[in-house]
Length: 144
View: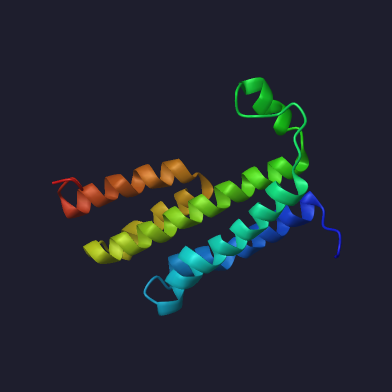
């Protein structure tokens, strides 16, 4: 097996998500967009994440029980990459949901594009902005 560094996986992961995000912005109605953005790309990243966390990641003194334990884990480059992939996977999945939900509700895609960009750059902000756009355009709360 070819040795791979955390830096290489970081770079490859960033490159891998870009076409999926481009499809969500420029071709949201194409039949392959949903497959690539919501399933294929997150699944590939998840497989890499599993590989890192199961095969490579062995924290010493790290854990989730305290801030100090999390800080200890974040001193490991492999854990940093795993955390980054975690964010890439979830942000892309949320972006794909936003695009799909907007299509279902008839929200103009021009309103969704800024939400997708924000979700790509800062996931939680993009999600909140999408919720606001959704309520403003649909004119009702999701639970009503």
